[in-house]
Image 1 (cartoon, chains in turn orange, green):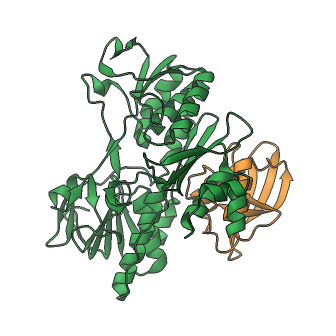
Image 2: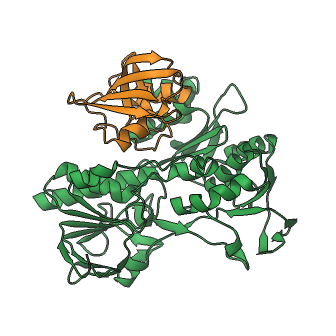
Length: 106
Length: 408
């Protein structure tokens, strides 16, 4: 199990124990994290699941071409640690991860 | 609750992408609204695209919910699951459910979506289809167990299912009535390329193949008999217009709406797959997630505007769509124009392609294969009030992102 922490724009944080193979957008939706819409259902077609990765213990998969392009074109305020959380999968090599949801994420 | 009477501000029939998006937007704009959302399925409302792109091929995957379970209650949205609407009474402004409940509305949104078209041939019911989660639960295990899979239909769903089955190691035959895959949906050069790439990966594609009937032996066609231990059809969808028709609303393909989402009844709106709207000088439906979400948002805002006595805003979409087929990601934006001039942009490999459509010299549509940057740029470019010409594209090294960054 991997500990995933979502920090909402209002500062409220939500901890989720996640199984391998789950992606963060689904976890966020299942747990009602505010600010994550996931309009395209994790197909990497929109930027409504933009997060900032604040802390990672273990390995995090790199962003693919599609994700990099979407972040570049669709996100107004981009940061070095910006990711689309539908593209972040929980793996055995990931002990814990903490992500922050930027304000005005839709 | 039986024979109960509920007074609602807005009743929404259908809890697919459009229905849920409308409910969420309405609540966001006015938290005091009493909203009833009626779903004819039992599961919580879920994302549909992953069904034919992922879920069918991995039975362990669970549904991707549109909203968490607690969302509806927290947002004052009364979600009726597994409920069937039997009647819309326009004079009384009431919606009747099969269990006897009656919901009274001030505004009604019809978001009933579409249903699988069946194969219009003898034995057509032998071919299984994919539309909702129940279909996946039924079909998923059968697909895992099958060796030879026959897929009928060369549209997006047929291609997605065939490509996914191939990746599972199945022997896949795809039967297509036209000369190439995706004939009506994408640029001819792109359709030809996708057809070739799927063939290269081992898919047996039979073009100009007409199905005459299905029986115990398999699928009978003008190319002979195709035996398969699983036969799947993806031959399109029909809008669910029955309730609207019964209520006497104007129908032309789908439920006719104007640019503000109004049907022929001022209290009733229609959104998503089921709505026929004026676009590009004709009445047409758009079957896509983009349209479901954006039109629902537009109608929700127009309902709020109406309640506040403010003017409504016209819905003016730049349609976009995507399809994941094995390793191929296809992305389309704009309106298809059969008479347009087609240009193919430079790319560094066979598996990457951008086809641009120019109508009377102006860019009106862009199809991309594994070239997300051009797709995203095209979405932005087509939303701008600038006419994009071939010369402009040429001047920026045939790179649409470069052109967009220049014009921005």
